[in-house]
Image (cartoon, rainbow, N blue to C red):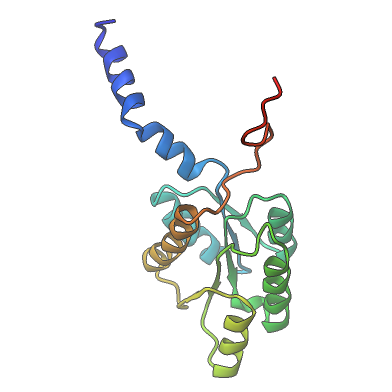
Length: 168
């Protein structure tokens, strides 16, 4: 019991840091979809430095698969996919109760105010500038990610009894 490793481990467990870290990251993932490999790599590296779990895809189908699987806690998507595809993706994410509150961030800002308004109205939460400053983009994405985590966004789908279920 007096082994320093055991004492440190018990102190770490009792402080709640381990539980907080697990709750923050358990099953939570940022999905990045951009046709530019450099953007995907830069954002991946910057978000990993922030301690976030990141998955990158090249096609929007990968985003849809992640949303359907309940893995997407924040979606980052490139403007290069085109307005209609972004509108369809945001509409799909917002239409599902399980993903309606998932933050959507678009890499690149539309030059046309009507396009930007349309994306904001369909459910895009934020835009990050292009050319990309990975650290600034990561800060904005991390802020949305943390806001979702702190305001009740589910981390992962859990199986088990409902609260109050006394079957044994």
